[in-house]
Image (cartoon, rainbow, N blue to C red; front, side, top):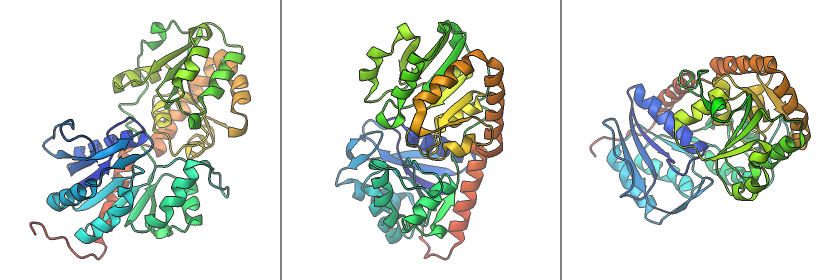
Length: 383
């Protein structure tokens, strides 16, 4: 199958990881993939035999949203006309192009799939979170029906979009997945590196919605012994305002953004506990990676993360009292390694049952096939 994938390669975020993992897995299964992403033409990476990259010009891009140039629509249209894919899959980048893409694909008679990533904080029957997350859902809902199908991560997210008028027949639930062979328990030198007896890890953006300060305050106020260390892995706008007040004197170490996947895996393999105190999420790939490495996990009940950890696969925190809960739980997990070992085993088992990349790709291939079998004016190659 020939697939045109529209997504992000930089800057690093969940969308970038999702696009990388899915496109690589599709290539491994013998599909041809063209990766269209926002990049400066002279700087974009080279092409492999089965995957070539197409740079789309932009004015600004961040981990949250992208502003293309006026020329980007023309470049995108011409590229799709030249590639002649069987199907187009857009990992939505919170860009104006997301809204014109259905019109472009309709003109070219190309079936179009979207993956909708924006974080949310909603339990069954609850309202959408306030702020930018609410605006993203409200803005996109009227347009998602213009895609042949929109992929989301959970039933809760389906209910949220249904309240905003998105037809259920235009939605498919395909959770994120990880490679459990690559992300697996194994040897690590990270504890020796930091002289740690017990190792706690946060990995993600250092931004308001991630609620990292609640974790830092809980750590500082809890009865944490010197042999326990907390690693903060990631970068973001709050890093430089928080780091001076929560440093090595409290056994907190800031590693910044870690680009090398092997290093991130080594950190997770050496960790006893992974903590995600977010106020909003989609379905955290970092959480799934930690679980797959056999790490005991604590995460707030936002997005689909609560579903992932439910029924004993981890500890689900309430967003209303993250700091006080962590202040109690951190010493408990510090003093009872048998508890973290058990939770780590349950976490990995949950991933193997529900959240493998192989299962994700198989569901995606089935979706592509179903969409291609629907009656549609055929796009004639070579026209």
